[in-house]
Length: 123
Image 1 (tube, rainbow, N blue to C red):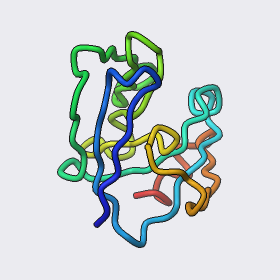
Image 2 (cartoon, helix red, strand yellow; image 1 turned 60 degrees about the vertical axis):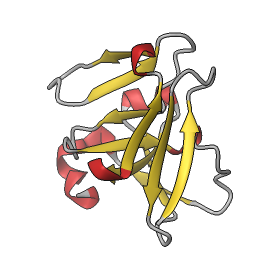
Image 3 (cartoon, rainbow, N blue to C red; image 1 turned 90 degrees about the vertical axis):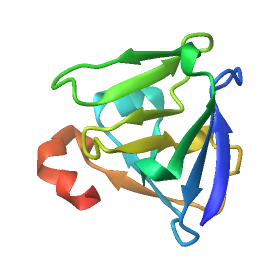
Image 4 (tube, rainbow, N blue to C red; image 1 turned 180 degrees about the horizontal axis):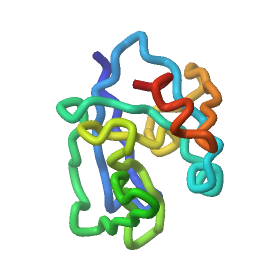
């Protein structure tokens, strides 16, 4: 496991995530919210995520089924992570918010526009 830290833009929200050494792939979803945010998905199990600072800076947005809980920094508006619909017992990290550069990671497209037909590909 490798520990990576990250944050929102202003640094008020900080987190760390344990990533398997061989996990070098993130998902680029084409659904409406991910496209507008530019979110690159790194999904991890609950025990591999730690919120280090800023719980009081987080606000939550949900829509549709209201299962996914999209959390944003109330100061800068950046979404460093959220509770995903596909993995409600885990965390979805925005790989673009990691302090570690993404140069050695590969980006795999995910057809989130047709989420129900494709969600099994990421479970």
